[in-house]
Amino acid sequence: MSTTSMHGMWSSRLAFIFAATGSAVGLGNIWRFPYTAGEYGGGAFVLIYLLCVAAIGIPIMVAEVMLGRRGRQSPINTMRALAARQGAHPAWQLLGWIGILAGFLILSFYSVIAGWTLAYVLRAGSGQFLGIDGPGSEAIFAALKAAPGQLFAWHTLFMVLVVLIVARGVASGLERAVRILMPALFVLLVIMVLYAAQAGDFGAGFAYLFTPDFSALSANPGEAILNAMGQAFFSLSLGMGAIMIYGSYLSSQASIGTNVAIIAGMDTLVAVLAGLAIFPIVFANGLAPSKGPGLIFVTLPVAFGQMPFGALFGAAFFLLLAFAAWTSAISLLEPMVAYLVENKGFGRVRASLLAGGAVWLLGIACLLSLNAWSGFTLFGKGILDLFDYLTANVLLPLGGLLIAIFAGWILDEQVSRSELGASHGAWLYRLWRVLIRWVAPLCVILVFLNKSGLI
Image (cartoon, rainbow, N blue to C red; front, top):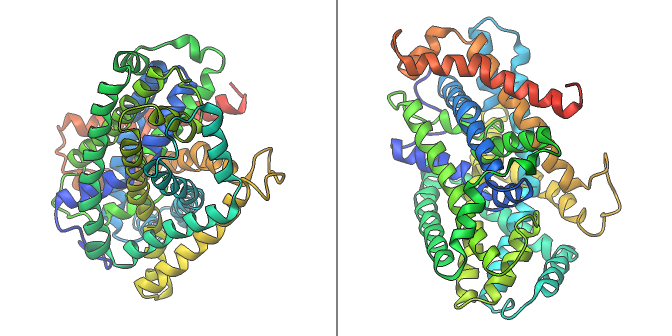
């Protein structure tokens, strides 16, 4: 078993924590979490989400990092090698392919949405939202989505930024970027929360996030739970190969369990802080918290346009979104690049350009589905919406389920004990073993069956 990766290694435990947190902290926390919580009644959804993180997300994240560090290769090659060592069927490498596919599809539409954040940095900073009302804000957002040329330009710029970082490698690219971007992201987020406490209705926002209203879930509890689980997977970057490849760059001496607990805690903290930054502003301006995806790009610009220093803080907020998207996007591209370097003999720059170019091309189809191709649907959804649904509700939970089964049932127990540094009497290891073998897989399966109408 190799103790290092051919792609490089994190220089320190802190570098891994920053990188993995950067992968986990993204639009899933700051854009997707608040509007999804708003759609399912606030506090009730938050409670289910936190339970999903604790009982499913953290155990699977530990398993994914462990498999990555054990294999020291791209997800596909890691699963192929680990399956061979355990005498398991070579089809287990499909787990790696599911992760690569999920990351590929997510990044294709993620880049389009990240392009919106870049566009809104300029719009907010130039004062376009000053004094604007709801219909005016909706018109600006609709005009952006209806302009394929603008979307193409912002999508292209964002993908160029992502490829530039990934092409530079682990130490010079990924690690250096997250060491700058992650502290900057947290500083911006804290500033936004302080601003919301001063200029918004902080009490109403706090109560909305932390007071469960289970009546909001009664119409379709299975859908709410599936969305909470999908949000946990999306937010923690599970099942898409990113955490596995980042784990392959982690030192053999580092504690996986401790690091994952810190990463999950920081990720959840960002999601909660994002809600505390957004909902007080929403309630102070009499706006709807259940606005859906338009919560960030339609509702908040109205609030920023009516607040003191709204242009400055609006620009800062959308810059925060752009930073979060950037740190996540580089982790989504990395598994594809690693695979091309390992299997095709490409140099890192060539592999980054090829993988990034393929994502960029698919992203064009996603952005066109918002305008020129809006009449084209598959299974009743446009391309971007279909990719979002397929990844969050199918591929990521499926990938997590297979990770749990492999780590809990296929991988030799002595291997997992060795990687997790657990003695035979370690109660935390025994708890993880129960969660990864029984609780996490059964929860995923039950929610899938409920969604399909079988139970």
